Amino acid sequence: MKVRTKLFSGALLVGFLACVYWILRETDTLTTILDTNALHARVVQLGAWGPAAIIALMMLAILVSPIPSAPIALAAGAAYGHSWGTLYVLLGAEAGAVAAFAVTRFVGYESVHRWFGDRLSIGLIGSQNVLMGIVFVSRILPFISFDIVSYAAGLTVLSFWRFAIATLAGIAPTSFLLAHFGSEMGTGQTDKVLVSVLALGGLTLIPVGVKLYRDWRARRRLERHEQ
Image (cartoon, rainbow, N blue to C red; front, side):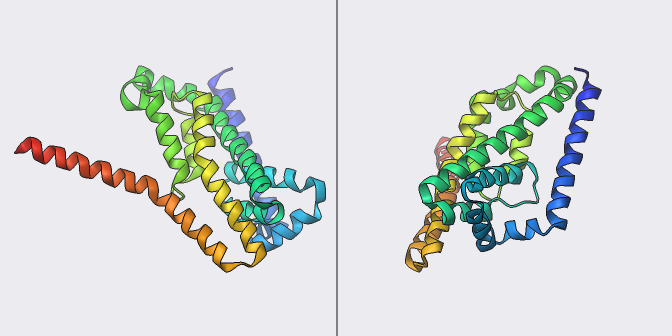
């Protein structure tokens, strides 16, 4: 398929997602998504279709950046508990990430490869293990945009299955904690909610702590070498 055709297809997809977001905003559906309690009530009303709605909303939240995923994950936990809630959140987030990766891999990878050529396969940006590690760490850190990483990864040489595995491994702990947090919020037991919040914060600090420790070790080795 020609590059122009791919770019046109990508533009159509962007336009479609923009229309979806506009419809959600104009119909006040976005307001419901942002309100965990309202979304929880709506999901419960859907009955057997509730899990499918959670998965679809999680997927949409990854593809359309302005839609936050945290309220959806909390509502999933409140409606279905930590186990099933985690499963539905994982399925939706993984599907959304894979879809975003596939979009840029299909639309933009060939163009990027033409511009940079073999340089994409040289050094750290050409290492499957390094790229896989970057994706994994980015999934743990909440201040790094989930969707941007998914889209950007599709433009690299990272293989599809490595991206999928790194994403799944990275989002599993956070998905469980958010679903668990949502489940405990529904019980009204503030002590358990506090534990969940602390656990989520601790999980976020782990990669930061590892990075600081490695930097400290590197400085120590450099100081010893200079002596």
